[in-house]
Length: 396
Image 1 (cartoon, rainbow, N blue to C red):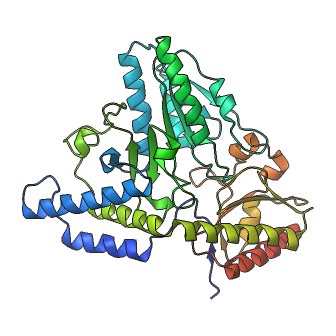
Image 2: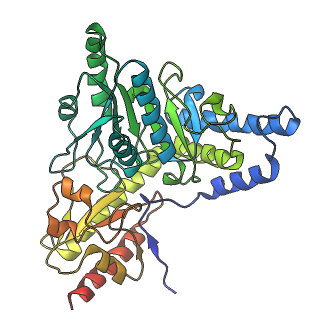
């Protein structure tokens, strides 16, 4: 049986062996309730603190600013609900929120629901024809009642990296001016789900107020965390009510083994990020070279090629074919990939690609290839041949 090659790492990643071992060990040993005063509870609490420190160090944050959550969706919802609640408490009847027009549904859907309930207004800032967001365009959408800007750090479909640091710098100056004129502060959140483990993520350099962390995107378990700069000063309220866990910001007995696994995954990023990132970039460049060499540049188009992109992501469209990307992918015998985000229908055209300047005929044939930290040239060669054979089979 021929081995498959997994190029869908932007959807999810497999657990690293050391992460799996840490989880199993914790399942066996750290079963005490972390809120308990017993020796078992104290041991669980201690190992949770160690994981929290690892996660904080991964993004250069104080460990007190890390809140464990169930994942990216909860973290994003937590930020949105916290800031809206804060804004309304300060007399903003209908707070305004800004996002890009290619955000993940974990950000877009709660905003749509709140707008439908007449609780907020929001504006979507368009990306350009290369899928890139420009900070000047974001600033132009600010209103007197704006309370939050929430922008992903890198897009999950195109891999395009957004100018979070530059935007935060502009926001710092803008907030100084707003204070002088008696306008409310604008908080800044970035969803770093796709960035962590691929490029450097440093909150002291980014100067964001909130940052979303998603474990299963960097070879960890399916839980997450939220960075909140100085919780209490920066608005933060629990969306899950109950006990006082996570300093009262996230109720529910902590999932100790998964938290331990998240900490172990963070430790790997701390120790190996440069190697991981460099290998992914080399393999991405080799993959793009081989696509153009094997197919010819008249048959393949690398989408958003002119923008800064994650080192692991190639969104490629196939020309001169009546087949869709889904049909080409379905005909592959060894490649595992996707045509759009995992949370979207694989049969529909990607709205992200259409908004990023990809023509409809090319969006229809697009496939997202997201490499892993251990991808090899042999993997790429297998994928290239598999795609080439599938492309020509679907022409018949």
